[in-house]
Length: 136
Image 1: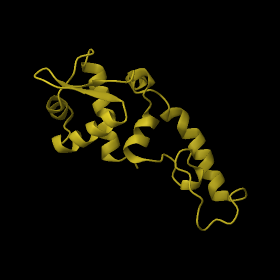
Image 2: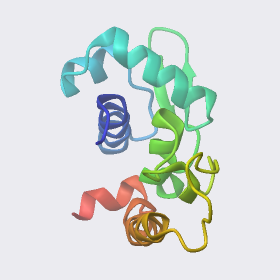
Image 3: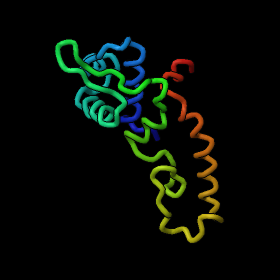
């Protein structure tokens, strides 16, 4: 299930893309327009800034704007930054792999094979940039 944090992060990035024109937008404006609780949004913005997706600009005309080209920011990247692994079980994760405790043989494990297939079919869709969401 997609967490609220991920959903809000994607909504925030789409709002900045659609309304920023390269100018910073304050967290207050994003919060009000996207109906995201302000304190919740502050934490998401901090995380996106720490991961070099956004940068913050101080001052009266300050706020947040893209540090990274929005055409290069994928939905998968945002999910991984905010929530961690995309894979539904750890033994099929690219970036957060962990061996299953109860698995004796990953190669013949039918559950793993199913979830590898699911991950492989899901990733091309999640690897679309946030700007591609405009076209949906």
